[in-house]
Image 1: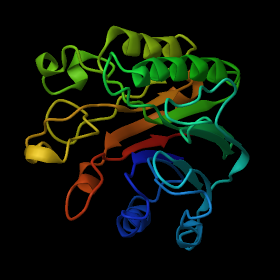
Image 2 (image 1 turned 30 degrees about the horizontal axis):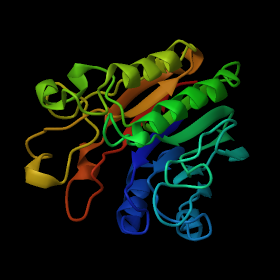
Image 3 (image 1 turned 180 degrees about the vertical axis):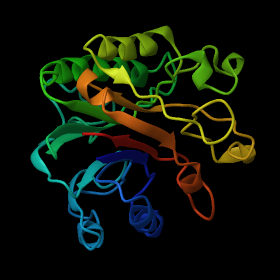
Length: 259
């Protein structure tokens, strides 16, 4: 099975690139984040022409997640129990969904950004991770993979210059502790092979030529249960998808699983 995850940064804006990438990379399952469209507006017909069933969770403005599969899309769930309400929302934001695809329980996750450490958005981020841990704990008896934009760099090696991030979100001890709490459930960090330089960065700011200088971060992650992690044959960051005209600011991670 080929599994992939990609913060596409607006599925409508990136649709031609998404369809081209699907035709070339041919993942069996693709997790999308930051789709920025409602479930009703998701281009299910277009991806369906390539053989993918689609399920989407979105409010039509920001956030939004989706799952595409050509190996089954069963037991779809939107959000998770105890998911906190966003700071500026009256209901939980569209940041998480799961489905069973080819016998694998797959989560597509888009964690809150957190903004600044003194912001209520940061407290919301930590509460969201705590609730996510409880939700994933209830599913660890099955083959499980939780993919997406976690908006946390697990270690200092996962940012291009740790000194520049001191005091900022994405690297704080509390955020990294939240990731450690997920790993303590038995989930393993499937670290992809970098396609340029020593670091498997997945995100590069649009500004100041950050991508071309490889000044990025590894904040898109694939966390897998031990049985799934043991099936990993290869994993890589597809930097080519970050190139060209009008790319997302994230690159996909592609993971190939054996039987």
